[in-house]
Every structure is written in structure tokens, then in C-alpha cells.
Length: 640
Image (tube, rainbow, N blue to C red):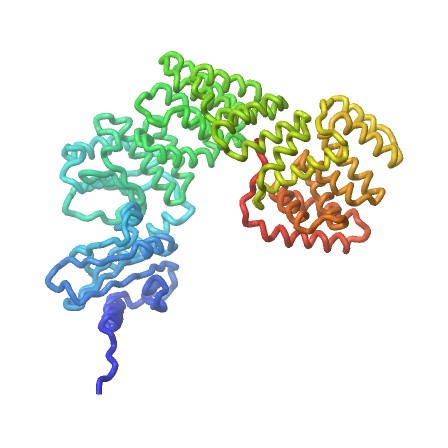
């Protein structure tokens, strides 16, 4: 009779864990994880007195029946497993077990893994050497490694940082590593506030151990940066300056260290290295490196460093990332800059323009004018338009680019040059056939007073349910109601006269019937005055004309999209009117996407002013429920 047999792999796993536990100090505790937990177990370190130290690490054991005659042991890890290990807060100790010789090998996962290797392959093969065999000193080495790992994971790191130089190749840049070591040691010591060098290792036969917090490693082909043994940055030597260009060579190393600290999540430390290297490093010929460093600086308001970098770009013809790219990048953070920094940026850009003119580089000169226009449209619309126009004059091909006409259209719209805006959007549409541009054309037509044409253009477009399309759907509806209420298919808008009538309205007392007549007179002068529509809604609601009041408040919301009070009134009246529930849901969605939590602050204030709070509380609760379904969606605000 054949009895069931236990698979060899299962017994081998148990055997390997027993052997590993046997080697652990008696005051360390091993806790085995359940199958498929991700790691095989966790070890907690206690002092010899039995006191908890808080030091823990995970283990992953790989066991084999083969390899007894080979001093090396190979293990294979899935890429997904590696990513999982990288996400853990505790370090992972890889444990290899050779059953024929009862040998335990140990190596930290974070010491041997190269991020680029992990991303490029389905499996990663690691080799344990004789140096990785468990010895009497292994437990002390593990404790030291845990301390360093915890330090790099900690939020409390201060400079100067303990650092070591390692040369594992027989040559570096084709030279004897000793001569490079002298160059590095001499010049890196010029940064005592950043680095404190403890050791220099020149021994190709020795594997890199976890020596210091910062480990700068050169082999024959690459520069590697390890923080606490965690391999974070690899740079091919062909991408960094040779040692005879000392200033750039040193800057490349400092920038690489800064990038490593970005990846480790220590952005304040990273900024210190980037500040000292950005203007002279050659590594930012890789655009992604520049953006990593620039984002790190900008997020900590180091705009002055970036502005100085823009100036330096003009004199660095060898730099692929020039002032144009840096300028475009700064647009992302323009609102966070102080007035002085904005002025310094503008002065820097004008200086760069002067250099570009001197070199006669028309393409770059046009691009610089365009970049300045992009930035200035946030503070001076007319100056922005001037720079766009200069860019087009220098580089006429801009007129064949749809984004140029779209930018011009948006700028002209903001300047209230609506008919010109319509023409610019039409040019953009003819070049791209982007249907969004038809929406912007319709919007421009509407503000020129050509209401019927705008409505017909809106009516020919389809609207989806996302927040951007919902906004336009509501605008199309409101335009139809404006035409219906005023009987205007087109109008020569008299904005100043309309405001004059409304000022009289606010400075005098009218009965409701008179108030409505005065407001309608104002709308006859300008049917797109949001204040007139809001006050019309107030007067109509007092007379219990809920449907008409609802339309008036909704029109006011669309014409002044950040008016949370108008949105609030439209939504509340929608529940008391003959409005379909699906339409109210669209309004709530648009209102929340545009106003955010200000919408609910307005609702709360409104509720406090009511005598019958319960009725309105029920409506507001329903609005909250609708918003809960869209909170995870991306906020898209209508923009030109």
C-alpha cells in the first residue's frame, strides 16, 4: 500500500529554517510568517538582557539540494517579489541554504538590487559568494546594517553625511583608480557641510559592504550611489564628465547623490546637493534628471537657485536643458513665487533673450519669447500678447501650429477681445479638428453677443458626463434660457451702461415688481451680467416663481463660475422646481468640481439662516450623498 509522501521541497524549507534559527543569537526571536505572506518570517533583536531594541528585519529563504561542490549559490527572484520587498519598511535579508553542506548564506536585498535591473527583467538572479557565508561576525554586521537602514528611512538625517569612496574596477575612465581617488578626495572635501569622508577603498576583489551612509562607487563602466547600502542611482560613465574636467566631474557626483536622496524620500537633503551642483553638472543632459532636481527645489521654494540656473544656461552651449526648458518648468510653480522672485525670473529671461539675439539663433529666440509670453499671461496679459506676437514674427511657422492659435484665443478672451478670440480659435480648429475648440468658439461667439449662433454651435456638439463636458452642457442650456427670457438672438452688449443701472438698483429701494423691471432693463443692455441674473433670481424666488428663479441662479452660476452662493441657490431651488433629478445631479457635479468644499460652506451658512432647518438639512444631505460618488474623480475646471 502506497502512503502519501511529503514533497521534498516542503521538508527542505523546514530544514533551512531550522538551520537558520540555530545560527541566530539566543536573544533574537524568529517568527515564521504564514504561507504566501510575502516573506518567510521576521526576526526581532533583543539585547543580551532581554530588552526590546525595536530592531527587526524580514527574511526570505531559498533552499536547494544542489551546489555542494560549488562555493557559490544562485537564487532567482520574481520581479514582482522584488518590488514588494522594496515597498517594505523593514529590510529583507536574503537567506540561501545549501542542504548537502548545511551552509547558510546571507545577503541584504537592498545591498544587491539595482532598480533598473528589476524593472528590465521578469526575474533577477542573485549570487551568494563565500563572503556571504554565515560567520561569527554576521549577527553584529546585521545589527549595524539595520541601524543604517533605519537611518536612511528616518526623517531625521543631518549633514555632513558620513561617506566612503569605492573603486571596484581595475581602471576608471581608462585611468588608475588611485589617481581618480586623489582628485575626488581633494575636491569633495571642498564641501565639508555636505560630506564627511571616512574611507577610500581600492580593491577590485572585495565586494562592496555597507560601510557608510553614502557610498560612492566606481567600476569600469558606471558610477553607483548607495545610501545605507540601498542601491538607488546608476550612471554610465559616458554620461558624466571625465575627471580632467574637475568642476563638472565633482558636480556630476553631487547631483547623483542628490538624485539618490530624492529616491530615498529625503528631499531637503537632496536640495542641498542639487543647489551645489545644478549650474555646472552635465548629468542633466538627461532631461528627466533636470526635472527631478527642479521639482525638488521648487517644492521647497528654492526658486532663486532655478532662476540663477536660467542665467547660467545662456553661457553653457553644451547643455541640452537650456533656459527655455527651465522657464517652461517654472510656469508650473509661478503662483508660488514671491513678487521679487517673479521679477527676478523676468530679468533673467530678458538677459537670456539678449544672449540669444547676439548668437542669432532665431528658433531659440522665438521659443524664448513664447515661454516669456506663457509666464507673463499670469501677471500682464498685454505684455504676454506682445511676446507671442514677437515669437510669430521671428518664426512665422507658429501660424501653422494649432497650440499657438489656441493660446492666442485664450489670451484674447481674457482681454475681452471676444470676436478676435473667436477667429483665433477658428484657426486652431482648422489646424487640429479638436472638438473642444468648437466649444471655445461657441463661448467666444456668446460673449460677442451672437447668442443664436453660439447656441446652434453648442447644439451640434455631443456632451459626455465628465465634469468638463457637463459644464458646457449647462452653458448651452443657460444660453437657451437667456435667449428665451430676453428674446435676443444677438445683442450689442453695453456692459458699462448695464453696471450703471445696477448701481442705481443697489442704491435705491424698490418693490419686487419694480425690482424685476429694473433688472430686466439692465439685462436688455447686457444679457451676460451675472449680478443681474443673481438678483433676478432673488426677486423671483420671493414671489415663489421657483422655476424661473432656478434658471436665473443657474445662469448666474455659469456666468460667474466661482460664485458658490449662486450654485447653492440653483441646487436648492432645483429640488423645489419641475427640474428633472438627472439634471440636478449634473448641476451638483459641476458645482462641486468647480467650487470644491466652498460649496458646502455656503450650504452650511444657508442652513444656519433658516428657521425650518430640518427641511433644508434633508436636501443638503442628499447633495452630500451625490458628491460622495464623485470625490475620487479628477477636478476639471473650465479654462480658456
